[in-house]
Amino acid sequence: MSDTYTNIQLQSAKTAVSPLLLFSGVLALLLLISEVVWLPRMTRIEVGGVERSLPELEAYRMDLQARIMQAEDERDAFLLPVRDVSFLQAIAWKQAQEDLVSLEESLRRAATKLTDLAEMVFASIELRPADKQLVVKGDVRGVGPGSMTMLAQFLEEVKGLPNVASLTPPSFVRVDDPTIGFHSPFIFTVTLR
Amino acid sequence: MMIRQFLSASRATLFSLGCLLVVAMLVMSHARTIGGLRANVIPLSADIPALEQRLEVLFEQLKLTEMQQALRTSTPEERMRVYILPRELDLDRLVASVETLENALRATQNLRAMSRIEFLEAATLPSPVEGLQVHPFHVRLSVTKEGLVTLLRFIDLAGSLTISDTLSDKARERLLQASEAESPSSIVALEQFLRTDLLVYAKDAKSYAERLKQSFSSEQFLAILDGTLQSSLLPEFVELLQSDLGASIASRNLWPLPFLSISSIRVTQAESEWRDVELEVWTFTRTEE
Image 1 (tube, rainbow over the protein chains, first blue to last red):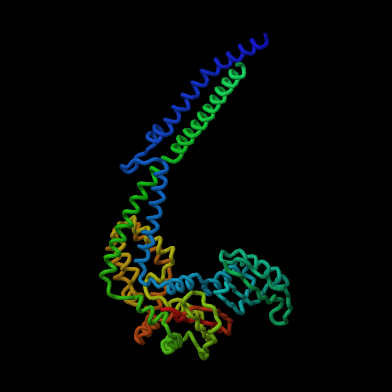
Image 2: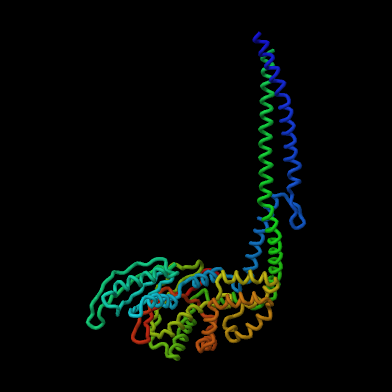
């Protein structure tokens, strides 16, 4: 009895699976044909009068970009009157160096931003372009006992200049001179960008 | 028989499941392809014609510059190798250049004292540029602010030969891109302008400017060119070369000047308008042909 029941169940299962098998088999076949034949044809795009698939278009764009870079390099080389590599590098290296006059002007502008009373004396300015170092020696005068504060404010202004990467602060000292009154001599080093 | 039926039903089920798995994978592949198409087709359709056009312009410019090269006879490269970066240190020319600067500054009363020129030991100094050997020398001067500016501009100028040498790579690139928009053939006029000798240009800067305006029709290109030149070292170099110092350089046959560059400079405030300047300057020779 139980064998017959199981037999019937198996027969039913086999009958139920057959349409599913047929359907999934046909669907898989149709989708495979679509993937191989129909989709590549339908996804070809015409650009500039030529039909290409998406991967072909992307490869073509990369090829165009590479050829443009090569043509630019060749054209740029022709434009240079002197093509010697050492000469071009020497010129570029020199052009990248900071100009002392501009730096000094930036420092003076930073000083005059603070106050009219302050007298920022720049005793010496030393520039080492290759090391990108600027050493400034000077004195803050004419502001009375607040000379160290004025110096600190000046250093903040200098730190904020666009071509300044960092600043090594000086020692802060206030000296009372019988002739010039309170003053703060300083020497600090700036590292340029 | 039951087992056979069971196995048969199982196989059919498994095969159906396999087919459904394949169906799922193919549907995902379709979705990916169509999704990729939607995402990329518009940018690619826009990019490719523009790239093709740009390539065409570049090829045309390349053809024109190659033709110009074939017609060329003068050689800035040779002058550079002989005078600016020679194989051997040309002491005579170098000292004469510094002396010319000193004379010009004294004549305008912008210099009151100059020390001897002391050459320093060069053997161990690493060169910042491959293929070049450094030759440092030391000099001290007492100059006014104007004298200091002239001194620094002179050193900036020393080693430059053509208008191209006053421009940075970025500035040249900007001009090239503007010339593509102007017309491919404008590159010939641009190239001729850039290879103009600085001393020759300084003697007649106005007529060169007029010639440029005639070569380029677009106001936009002329504005870019003018802006690029004004922000370069060219105006300062022209001013120096048009001065008595420039005339001395020309009359003593010192053009182009040997390559000079500042290694270190210290400016100390002296009395009144005077400044004491301590300079270490580098000049270079070539180590390779």
